[in-house]
Image (cartoon, rainbow, N blue to C red):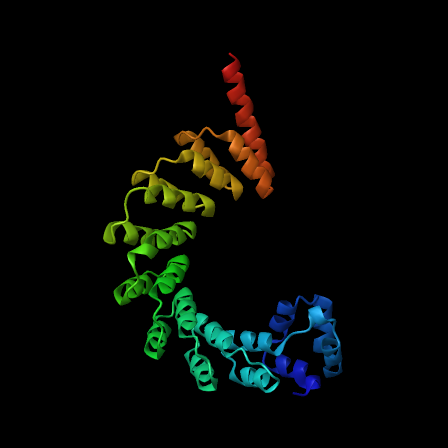
Length: 280
């Protein structure tokens, strides 16, 4: 590969900014590189930590479904075809997945999981056709991203009961109520998993799901308080206290750990109020 042609090639394909961003380059370097093709030497002669590898370039190109750039990276020595396959699947580029397969990619399960994460059902079906078999990973990723139809498809294909609790956690943490309801109302998750859902929703800052978990019988308000304080969700801290949480010392500790100054102040206020009541 002629390194001197790298920058003009990227610029002509509209990818120079993305590549430089992934490298961690400054806006000043972006301007210099766009100004003249001779500045390609700036990129080629950059310190090792600033250079872009051909495999990384291949990954970026696959995410955009850019076949010329994929082939350009491969001609320069890129070999990570499974990454190309997974990145293309995540962004829904079927033709790029087929190209990766033709070139030698074989990670069908990785393709399946990334396609599920991106919500691309046709690519999930294609991955199955090519040999994917790990449905639990498929349902895990689909729940994280809120793709109910793909969760149902994974269950139909054989996702096991052992993954359903993790599916509920992912859905609650990322605020996907429909998948939480699917897990409980259609697939029968019960018992202590109500608190599991409450904790995940508190971590993610989703008040509506905390309230839903309470409707379903969750009661671990102190853990809700601790999780909400870790990630700086003040409204959920107040809600947990309203529902009966009292572990303000742990709240303060978690807030300090997470660097949540406003939560720290609130916890100190509540500790002071508690101590005053105890002294009376």
